[in-house]
Image 1 (tube, rainbow, N blue to C red):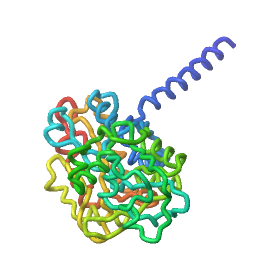
Image 2: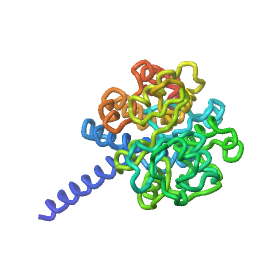
Image 3: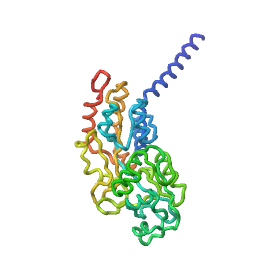
Length: 346
């Protein structure tokens, strides 16, 4: 009997040890909230297909960059790509994983999704605190016939370091010189007005709760939270609505082969159908992998996602990278990502 109890205890102990080792084997990533919905969907499907898990912290691009630099995660994620000199200084490499759009959202009684029009100049004026009421002449001029309340605009922005903020401020800086000088373009800026929300989740929640507010979120959050998005005037002078086809239009002219370190920002691109605040979300990894098996698993996950995740991306209104680009990314893995002995892990 005692022998049986000992065997049973050993079996239980082995099961516990296996459970912990399986958890330890999960890949870890942290960063951008912009791609979180699709990474979560890919991770769920990948685990079903392979048994291997992904623990991804949606903490904002700034946090993701900090964590990969500190080597506390297997990969970082950022919607603001790092320039080649910054990558080299930290021993990092980067590649795009998915393309999506950042969208203005409003909470105004009587305004239906996609009916209100916005321009970069008007958005810049609102986010600089120069346009303060919804019935301001600048807004009324591009929305003739729309009933606009004489109410103060509550501005909502990100409170954390954010690639979504980078794309938003990069676009506004490109179309409005005053915004470029006064606020600038970065993952975190000093906002003249407004309330802060943490993550796309926080901004979405604030806009949904606060009447007469405006914010900016990735389009998947618009769809998931049934928010009221606006139209936006693009470089060709067309007012367009956000969708995966208009994000594709923005990405059509992207030449990844000529981009040093794959640094490419897709805001304010030409094309009649182009959504002007489109961007890629990037994955950051160390060129020298201390844990080669874990590094290889990360690459296997994204390789699987590139080959199998297209329908899931479309369902959430993201745009998958074209096959020539994913082939180029794979070649970059072979050339750049190695184990401690200098051997390629892919």
